[in-house]
Length: 200
Image (tube, helix red, strand yellow):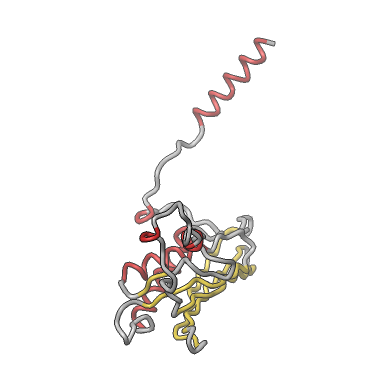
């Protein structure tokens, strides 16, 4: 029994020694293999394309000066993968915030506020336990001007002995006062590789 346990331990040590070592990857200089699934490079490209096009189009230039307030609406995942669409929207939000033209509200959303503390903090009104001078007053929340919505689509095709996977990241920026889309964009990401590669 002891010999068998020792043999298993030796096998595990040998396997661990032969495995590929874990290492850091610099996202700005990653020339590693491309996956057929969507990875961080694809989200980076889609977000960069969208923000650059929004800024170039003038859609986020507020004629009244100051910054527009944007809310993130529904980004539908119509792919075979379990994608957290925040990977895309967070990059867009950060870039727009840094541009000085757009700020995102977290006080409202399709499924309730993104940051529930906005409402929770207002429940402190009239509480004897809190100094009311520091409690948020009524009428201070800012309503959104713009809404970002979109869809991520995946299409798979057989191309001779390979497979082609097409992703389309479609986004719309809607002016809430009029309901009109003041900007729309689509970033196609096309990958071709072995038909044995997994794309879900």
